Length: 86
Image (tube, rainbow, N blue to C red; front, side, top):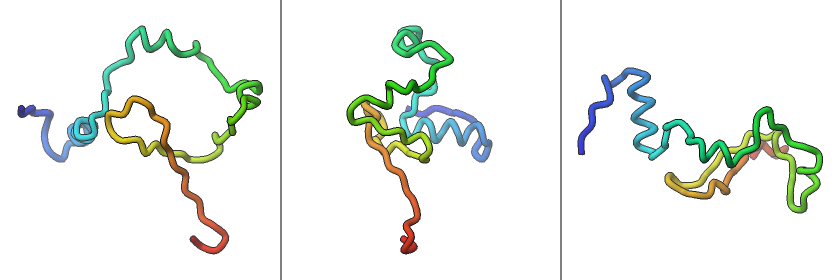
């Protein structure tokens, strides 16, 4: 299967290529997906942070490390400099 997506070097083409190579679906969400999430504007409520096992990590830059195509995006990492330079 071969598909032409645009001219090499073009930013939009290169972006599309990265999405395709990493199996990232860029289709708009369906109505079924929107029915599963709270209506906007949604914010974290104090009671959410009181749930057992919850920690507020919104102040950290966190990246998902789940493999392409996974169904549960639940693995992530955060990096910080330590006082000893590591």
